[in-house]
Image 1: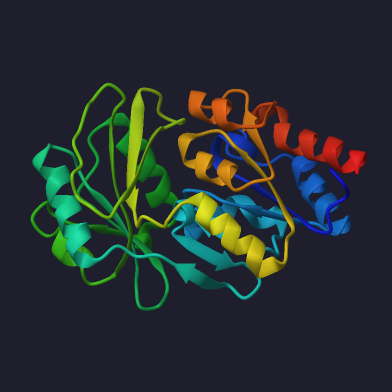
Image 2: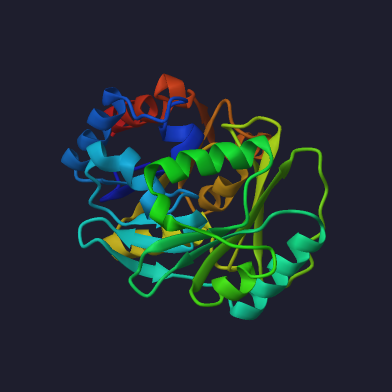
Length: 279
């Protein structure tokens, strides 16, 4: 490939750029600076919210818009504002919550309030994955979380702009989702093996949609992406080159153009350095 004018390098966070201890190593941080010094762009596309992701990204000093909530939001880290968002309708959210609850799952609803602040509505934590998720989140930012009852969670959520409905279940548990107008991802909780996160967003809320939009916003001519899970496959599909972490989900490994080192090996950074040296 001839030397591109401007490359957008975009990485997933958990299981890809973040190490198992939820840190980004100095080698990776230095590599992202090299990307910018070479005249290219680096950003993140993650299932996390801005509140959740920001504490991991402080040392990267990102300038390029970030994809959040699997692409439901695009956030400008320089202006500290949301550039794009896809919300679920109240009707879709309510139907989804009812359908989840009827099958014995505990819905978790991610919303944005009038002050553009993320909030999470939930009804408690019972399984190991839920307990890990909420204990970590409540420790860092307790004001984000609104405890509800099963009877009131949909009503409370309707007061906000709804980004995502999710629930956490054991890996072997089956479920049925018949609510229309949803993008559904089921992916393993890498921090609580044996459990899956099932995340439901607007049909246009996917990393591929967000990454294409970010590329257009920034004038990028080529996209190179890195990921490890099923929610990264849409991003792979719109990329000129896609790289799957070798410890990742089988579907990501199948769809990626290259298989690279793990998050604990700084696989993303090593691949980027080798690629830049070849230009």
